[in-house]
Length: 232
Image (cartoon, rainbow, N blue to C red; front, side, top):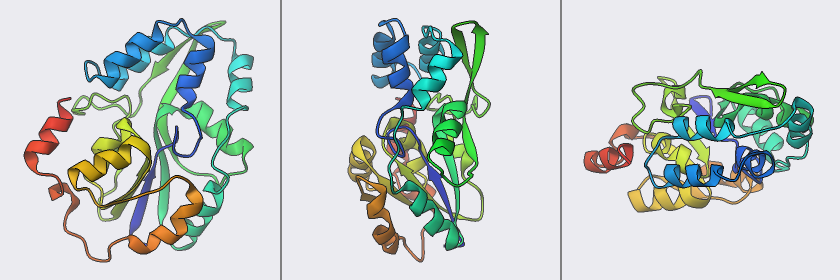
């Protein structure tokens, strides 16, 4: 797999739940749910959604750390990372979630040290927070907090592993996708080469499905479908 680079989502893919949603459920004013609906319906991008939602959180640092420590990950994730990296692939965690939370959760679960490309959390006062977007792009047509398409290197085949809306844009330009939940449905509707999975224990066997010769992935979706998605 030395010619493959893996872009792996975190929330709902490596973890069993969405970490930011669980923070909002526990620590934020209930109005966060209305903001979520605006994002899901395509009225706003995730950058605006997350900015408004995280401003509603009231939690002390110790409370957030305790919450991060309660998050469970897929027990087969570390073994999968060891397998693909042993075969020469590179792998980045690319998430529209929170870098601090991802790093703590992976470390607590004895995961290999991996590059993490994600948003940042900044303390405003004792129990208030704001989110920053070091990997955002004004050119991102999905208006994401983290433009995942920017994370794909040139000169390598790209395997995306993900589960939902934040992965759809990068999946449409990938060479292959391992997909859960709504991302799998999206790939199926749009003819994107993919394999559906529910747990990382399934993925070693699915590696055999990766194509050996590939048409440039950017042509996978008809242009009108790509434009339709990006303007949602």
